[in-house]
Length: 453
Ligand SMILES: C[S@@+](CC[C@H](N)C(=O)[O-])C[C@H]1O[C@@H](n2cnc3c(N)ncnc32)[C@H](O)[C@@H]1O
Image (cartoon, rainbow, N blue to C red; front, top):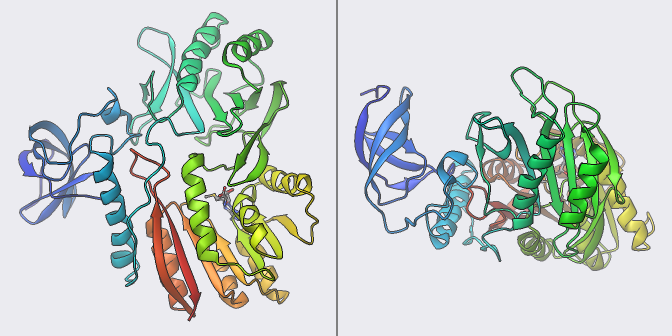
C-alpha cells in the first residue's frame, strides 16, 4: 500500500538508519522519521511518500524508548546539525558501530571484523572550526545559525554546543558591530547583500584564534575598527577577509586578505606542528583526530626502511605523524595552500625533500604517474573526501602494490565500496576501526586495514 502525504500513523521505531533517522515499518514498507529513537512509540505525519518507502515528521511522542534523553539544545531538531542529540552517547556509539558494520556487510558484502566505535574524548564544544551563515531575522537584525536540513533557511543557534563558547559569543558580537556599521547579510536567492559567512578556527593545543569574514564584496564598512574591536574582545590571533562574489553555495572564494595579525594560526596535531589559514582542510575535532591517527599508525605498521605514500594528504599531518616510523614520505593533495603548509611544516622540522615531500596534484593523476614511473611505496595511506577514492587512484594503488594500505574515511559507504573493489584486485581487508570524530551528529570516521592477499 502506498502512503499518502499528510497521512497520520502511530508507529514503533525499530532502529536508526545511517542518516540518524528512526526507522519504522507499516505494511512492510519503511518509514524514516528524524528525531526518533529505537523503542519510541510515535505519532508521525507522512511528509514525503515514495513508491516503496516514506519520510515522516514526528507529530508527538507517545512513549520513549530506552535510549532517548531530553536534548540539551532548544534547536537540536530544526537545526539538523546534531542528528543524534536526542539519544544517550552510549546509544550513539552503538548506533555508529552498527552504521559502519552495516556498510561493510551490506554495501561492501565483506565479512571482516568491524570493531566497536572508539568514542570521542569530548562530546560537546569539540569543533575547532565553524562556518556560520549570516542572515537577517524577522525583526531585521543580523543573526548567525545553521541552515535547516536540506534548505537555506537559517536557524538561529546562539549557543551551539558543538563549538567553543567564544565562537558563539563572537558571532553575536560580530552581528551587532556589523549591523551598526550598516553591513547587510547576503541573500542567496537574489545574490544581494554583503556578509555571507563568519569563519572561525581555533588551534586546539595552541589556543590561537582566527576569524575570517566571507563577503560578497571586497571589504566591510568600517572594516579596520570592527576587526580591531573583535580582536581585542576575543583575543584573536588574526583576522581575515575572504571575497566570494560568485553565485554559488561553495563557502570560500579564491581571494583572502589579512586585516590583522599574521594571516595564519599555529597548532599541533598528533605531535606535528603546523600553520593554517582558511583554505586548508584540518580535522575538526583535534583530540579525536589524534585517536584516529594513532589507529592509522598502528594499522600502517611501518618499518624503518619503508616508503610511505599519503594520498589526499591535506596539510600532510597523517604522513608526518608517522614519519618517525619510516624512511621516506610523499604526500599528494589538490589544494595548493595545504601543500604549501605541508612543505613549510617539513622545512620547519628540518626535513629534506628526500625525507618528506609533497605534491600539489590530483591523487589519481599523481598515483598513476608514480605507478608509471615504477614507484613502489611499502605502505599507502588514503584519506579521501566523502565521495571516496577515484577509480584512477584505486587502479594505480593496485599497480604500485604496497604491502599495506590504510584507508581513512568519513563515509563508511564509500569506504566499503572502495574496500570491496580492492579485495577483488589483490588485497585482503583485515579489519575496520570506527572512530567518533563528530559526537552528537550522525557522522562517523573509520579506518580500514588492507594487506596484499
Ligand atoms: C578528508 S581530507 C583529509 C586530509 C588529511 N589527510 C588530514 O587528515 O587532515 C581529504 C583531503 O583530500 C583533498 N582532496 C580532495 N580531492 C582530491 C583529489 N582529487 N586529489 C587530491 N586531493 C584531494 C582535500 O582537499 C582534503 O585535503
